[in-house]
View: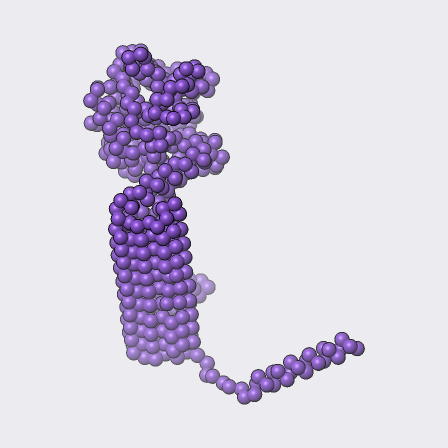
Length: 470
């Protein structure tokens, strides 16, 4: 089947009460329009056309994909007008045009494939995907005759009392053969709303004896459109549950699914354990056999097999190799690389640095703009002083180095292989391989200083008391 997809995304979304275009509101980490595009991608269309409104620039920047064209609907005149605007971008395409809404992010490729298959099998010129709604609300009703043949789609506000009782409703998904597109020009303006309704196309096709079909597929959950923030929240909960269910089916252990938040792009290997209050965002990938403790947030992270991430740690745009240990209370800022069997301990911050295999920074350190070799020991309180007030400078610590506690490494500086740095040192020059560097002032002991200090304090207190009495 030759296929082009048209996604209607020009709606303003007034009921969202937001300055953000409706289709760019996110659920599970991606704009709702992106979720629709991802489903469409699986259908392998020849082209994807997105009809946008005044917020054209924002939408084009926010979504991604191949073979996408954009069509501008300057004045919002309804879905019929929106599709008519897209016709000009079809370039005399011959085949099926699939029409979807950009504010229905839960629709799946499998349901749409089934719909397209039925439409093609029956040779429909115009077909509609419908579903059964327990509470039809504002959905357009599918009106059938006594033999079950669909005659029209009638909007809720135009429906009679009896018609409003109909529970089969329009999903807003259409399959239209290219030769039936000329019927779009026959849609009349709805004067009450000042819009052209795409729903009218179906009745026009029926009256002109074109082959039509309505196929009741999918679920109410899957087909829900989003017009308010409450509906967005409902849709996010549905999607989140599906994501967690899929992870559990794949062998992930989740202690409390209700308190675990996972974006749609996240991948997790089998036998990984997720504790409560874990947030996994973006296109994060986590290997097999990992343990992620409570209150951890990972954004765009790549985590190897058998990694342990302890409580209240944050990992952003970083890579952690197998068997490493992170946290508790660690922060990996963007651009960090942690080698296998390395340890980044409590209250350690790493920024744009590479940490070698087996290296340990167990507590209370800052490592920024540094390249650290393998099997290095970084003592508590160590700081790479990377910023000189104008630019960031690089620190190099080679294999097997021992850095004593409370060391300051003033970049740019290099510490050679196997060198030692004494605790409390301020290192401003390169340290040769195998050397011991000590960069601190000579200790001086002042005898009886504490006794003299106490005597001075006592004298001062007595003087103050005497002044008060006077």
